[in-house]
Image (tube, rainbow, N blue to C red; front, side, top):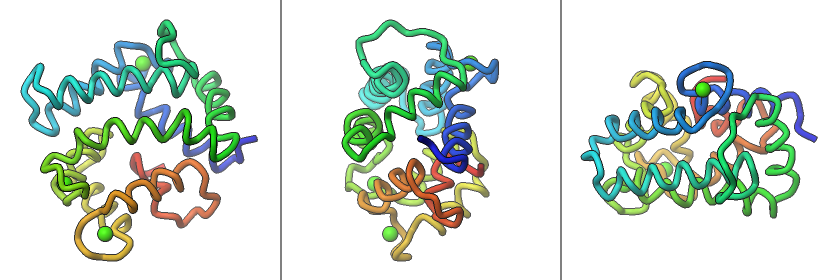
Amino acid sequence: MLSDFQKQKISRMFRFFDADGNKVIEPEDMDIIAEEFRKSFGWQVGSEDDKKFKGALKKYWRRLTLGNEDAQDEPITLEVFLKAYERNLQSPQSYEEYVKPFLDHIYPAIDTNKDDMLQPSEFNHLYLGFRNSLQEAQAAFQKLDLNGDGVLSREEVYQHFYDFHFSQDTNAPGNFFFGSL
Ligand SMILES: [Ca+2]
Ligand SMILES: [Ca+2]
Ligand SMILES: [Ca+2]
């Protein structure tokens, strides 16, 4: 069972994925998101990173919602989305199977200089890709950089992504992984 707080966070993520705001998530939303990320990161159309991100987004989108990355796309309502997350977050194993691969596959594209860490500029691109402002990105970075060394290590990013899904602590920085709730 998802707690009310988890539902609140998953609903926040739903609003991100529903890029055109028509209350269902459809393949067209993925195209809009991929285009926003391409612009935010400055990838050339059809470049390796553009293709990698787009491919990962579509594939893992299906796994997140339908449980199968080869499934036929279908419009996803918030209700269906929450139900999918009941399954995705049932156990640490289901998280590993359905949720974590999403980050595994977008990470190499968002880590622009390939040093396995997110510099503030890379994080800003990511956070703008989630349709937040630069000001919000800068404020979030301060909170997410747990050890204050000026970069987000891979461990920090994964910890926050995990906390976004599981933490019941309303003060956990990871709650703001996709932007303010
Ligand atoms: Ca939509
Ligand atoms: Ca980097
Ligand atoms: Ca850090």
